[in-house]
Length: 415
Image (cartoon, rainbow, N blue to C red; front, side, top):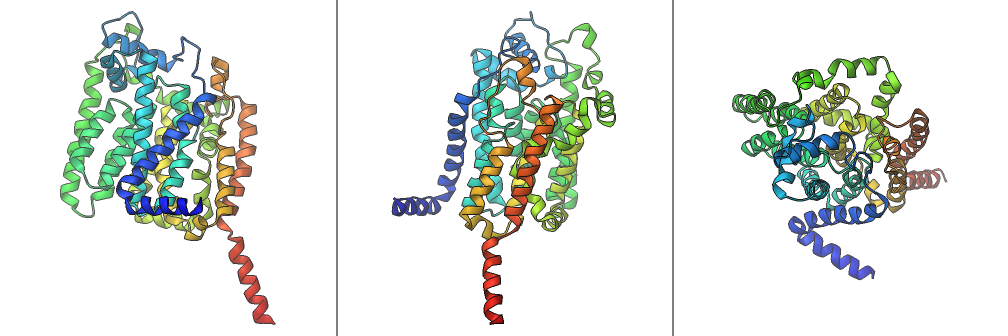
């Protein structure tokens, strides 16, 4: 058995440009197969939830059925509904298929991102496995499929990869598509600039401005000339974002909203969030060198702050940054220790609530997200994740074998 595994590994390494991405997609597909029996989709509001109901009505409107109520800002996220409308499929099935394809594509892009930074095949695939079990990733697509989130994450990764590879024209096209999926993707224009400005300051600055203006033109065009006219009471689309209300809820800690904002990454990202704290100086040095990622970190938290009640959904966007950071700052000895990796995997699965039962009613669905769960559940999960956080940082930071060898060498020298 062991020779067969070694032969397979050698074959994969020899054909990494093809085998690596295929394995990444395969890991995501396997995770979906494992998660599916334990993840029934929500059942309330005809199985659409509340946001999903608007996306479903938008899809129907694109098919000529205007019986639903399509309200902003959800009505401006046209692309997912347009894809499903054109497909002719049942709405829930259509969105689910878009989500599944986006999830598999995200696995490939995350792998490509890590390999861009020189991460080894092993580290890249471990990161794919860790991402595949996150609660706001593939499982979220199965649980609440009628949303643009999974397609939005795919486009986020595509924009990051194209920006880092300097493929500016492709970035521009993807940003237009992204603006029609999740408008917060417009915030990636400065990421493009920071990532490329050193090699061509004037040219990159001009192109970034043009791309940003084009994206903003699309952003305003779909609001000034909506594809589906909003009801009379919803004509002021800017008011519907409720920026002031969102900020007030955080600053007043209404329904523990400030606590949810502060804890969302800890409670939803597992070891992706914990491991960078094992090497804080290296992380700060990395962010100092890679200014685009420093901007990305700050902008993600700002968008989350003003975006509303969805802290863990917004902070899920930190995964690409955290995966890259860990791959760059973790010592190679960590990845060679099966015991430490096994402990980290267990801590990760516990902290992300892997295969925990989920309900389909409205009250049960609210317990899934950090932004909506009861305060009692929030406290319980904080205690659990604080324990796994400490365990993860300790295991990553302390190489017990190296310490033991050092003590033996010191003892021998003293003798």
